Image 1 (tube, helix red, strand yellow):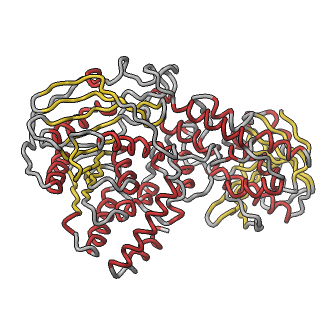
Image 2: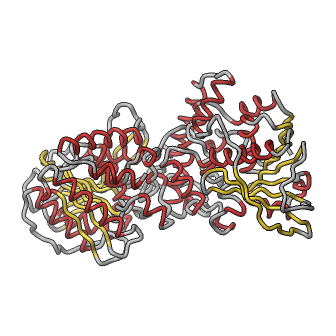
Length: 608
């Protein structure tokens, strides 16, 4: 996809072709983020809860509602040494638990306000005053850092077919609504800037809200491919669904707005690969030439690690002043780092304590409405819709397999076979008590076990594994696990990252695992197996119910640790189950109990 997109860009030879390409990417970006949380905007109900007076500027402490009962806390920096109206800047905070009170973010706001800009910096979900899990025990991962909280919110939203990034974008749109409602705003200029997670939202909003006249995205810009190659997981709002499947790269979010004024900012030692940053800058320089507006694009590379460092702040001030037609007045103002509490817009420093509805309650209420309005489908239509959600093809070919050296577990000889379910994707089939392990000999009726995270571990530890003669480690499980077992359930490591990239491609990691099992069953059928007794544990049980739905070879299904329903994964604010088990939009059509009912019509089903 990466190279195919590059070729498409190289084929552009004129401004007309460039504009056609822009129209295409705009539509695809819109499809990833829409529908937004609300079809129409509701009153902001904005209020100023306090004012901080400083030399040359003041800070208003602001609360507004991006959605009914969803409070956003913000600080509005207002110049006092300049005459209004002022060019305005919206600033989504980057990934800091302190949100708008992060010292670096206070710094860049003060640099801008001291040069005559009206600046609104706001707290994202689970940052600053918007901790959504305020009343939950502090020992939970969602209370330790905003990234864990974002990923919890994100995976639950997937079940109702929504994208956390759309909610983050909606907050930004409402922040723009607020600042443009102020009398102090100069209607000729509305800019946006952010660093890291704020750079993400700057990128997304720049492409989506054309009221913005200029942008400065920092410490985020590098191709998706570089993040994958560098094994860099990101927050759930940073995986727009289907974007890579539509051949859209990060660069396209900026290309969509050319030739509007834009500066990109990176740091030489950032974990967002600076090589990819340079590549994107070269693409944009080339694209802006089609409009004869090369002067409208700039980039800056600092000599630091990840962060909104002063050198980057100064580059933004200079660029924004240039575009706004202003002189740089004070590039080195006195910086006063306020205490976090001083900047609070709420009484207790938390919107939930102030009466805001937690995001998990918003999701739960939406899920309940979806379930209530859900239409009952006949079995054929339901299977078609489930196949589409999980990206499972109708026809599954007999896969190639390799014979691997056998291993011994507790003195028992185990045959091992690598099955190629997709090109260069190998899953491991294990056979117990393999007297002739170098030949895959299959009985007419067999027992197959799909483990939770590792067949080898479960053979050692689970007594009911003795009922099974075959085990399947699907992709990312057991022998193909890309990480240490102790990190498997970590909400910000490899299993989570792979699920995120499948979403980027518009596919399903869970669906691919189900496909792995169906492919192995196809192989076993070809070797003479006619009846299969299937066992599933935990994640393997979730995979198993879908396998039973689509396979005609299953005689019986036994399971344990299967969630009662997908809805039960939304009812609780915190759930440990990895995001790969949350199929996108499944609650719009069905749930686990309905799938089990269909399976029970044709085979024996029993909970262990």
